[in-house]
Image 1 (cartoon, rainbow, N blue to C red):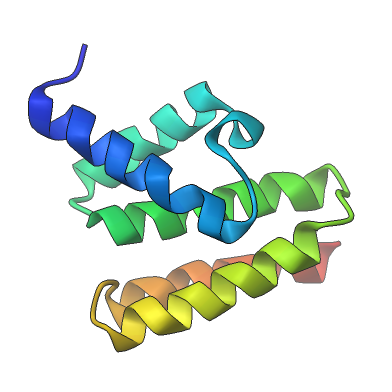
Image 2 (image 1 turned 135 degrees about the horizontal axis):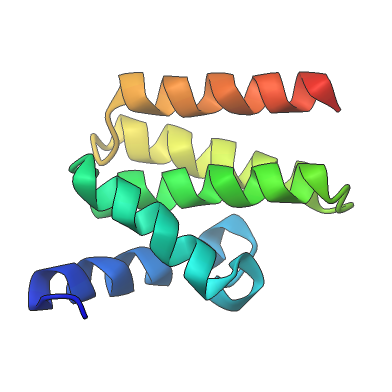
Amino acid sequence: MFGGKRRQYNGDVAALLPAFGFTLEEAGSMKVLSALDIAWQQNYSTYEAALYVGYLVFSGMLKAKESRAPQVREKISYIQADWVEKALVRSELAARFSAKADEWEART
């Protein structure tokens, strides 16, 4: 289905997700693969793709009114700051993701 590089990319991103406080299974494998299609097309690094998936999962948690959504957002924010500082994630991209999450939170 996917070439070697894409398969490695998907695996590398999936390995980063537990740091946000959820697993690939909790996030939904097919939903994550759909998000990774977008991340791949946008040439996101594996860290940027993991952050993107993290925010999408957070959005789903907010919509489902999951009680752990605030903890997941806190972990995402902490990790995002670290990855931006280490230049693993572009700061402008992280800022866009974070601003969108702020909008989602304001609506709840």
